Image (cartoon, rainbow, N blue to C red; front, side, top):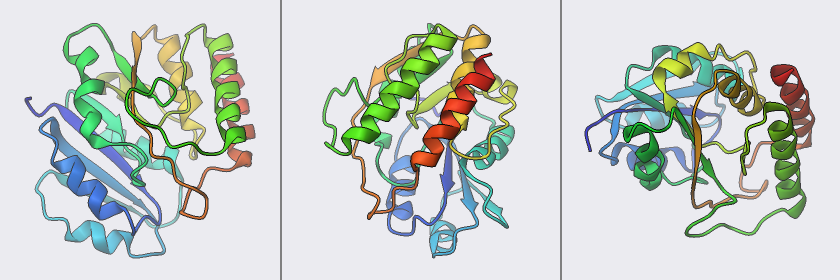
Length: 227
């Protein structure tokens, strides 16, 4: 596979997973560029990132914590590959599945591809019923307002043509970027496809950061960017 992909990794206090994640990303033949945005981590994340030696890595460092959306916005503006993908640093999602995500784009029938945790083809860790129900409700509300049928709007794995990513003009600084990106792609009449992905969710004790407050923020964003 010819290198055609920029991978964007927002990182906030992920010292236990960031090194393995970066090595697995860089091991994928499709990766041309890896932009890591350290979001003012207070642990050893930045130190570990700087030790990974590969010419494909670009490291951005936020002096204060700005949020995932702000970090992705900054990285999108610097992306130079044909396609760009958002990758969390926590190992819940597997870089080995990039070929499956890229296939609809490379074959020319998609402009954006979402990796759905609810169309799993391999494995999915059983965690948090209410969290899952919340995700399904947010996806339902997003679908109703955008008239785009998705099974997992809140997924991290969103890969798209870089030219589209640069047109999104992301405004949300935190996790509200997920419904914002979805709504804006729908308004662009982008051809959005879903593919099944595996999912190795982690607990809050293990470092999961999204909370119920982000759920209410997502509702606000769904309404704001669709209407």
